[in-house]
Image 1 (cartoon, rainbow, N blue to C red):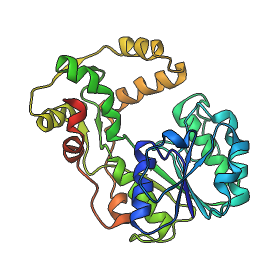
Image 2 (image 1 turned 135 degrees about the horizontal axis):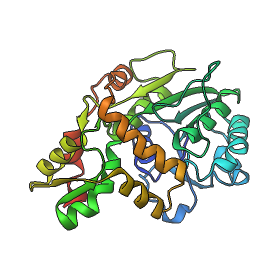
Image 3 (image 1 turned 90 degrees about the horizontal axis):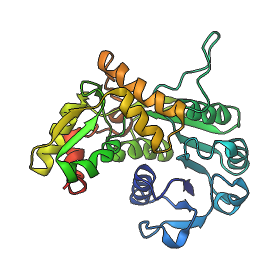
Length: 290
């Protein structure tokens, strides 16, 4: 039995579907099972990672956990949640993030209120838990470009920062496939315990090129409008982003203009098939932008 958290989200939902396709018994954690839309065959159990006392029923009889953590919002509960997981399960695959620093003498600590700081917290807790662990560290999610969908639908344009920032965006299906490969031992890789896998799509594209790929998928022009970084920061703060996370976001895009996010072969190494190009992701999600 494998427990999937974040099972109603993009990566977690893909993990549930792919595990079921592989013939694995799957249990999905949901705060509200009645409203959770999940594939037939998945056992849905009530629980909330932010309230570790609710997790025991979901963890009963579980061998491994595919952990998608509610970054920042549930960090207060992380020590108790990982402790409970370790009491029940043998292994864990944690969906972390590219750029989490590995602890080393002289390495500065990341801000715990940042996105990377949240992932670093979870990684350290898991490393000390006694679980057999594997970390997936994807870079940019292709699905994050869905944040552009409302303005594309309304205006035919994208207002955002650093159009020249380049990322090798990854399809959520490929992130899940890498995790399923580790959990089931069905992929081409070996020796997953203690591994920290950096995942990406097959090629870096600038954000302007990403918008062009979306335009091709929807069949109409979409224009890029460069937004000043200070305006973007103010808008993120107005939306309720924690200051450290908002500053981290804006700074990361500036850095990727000079230092593009490189592509890795890890998806193919783990699954035996190449990572999905962003243009295919855009075609798969074209209706969201129409």
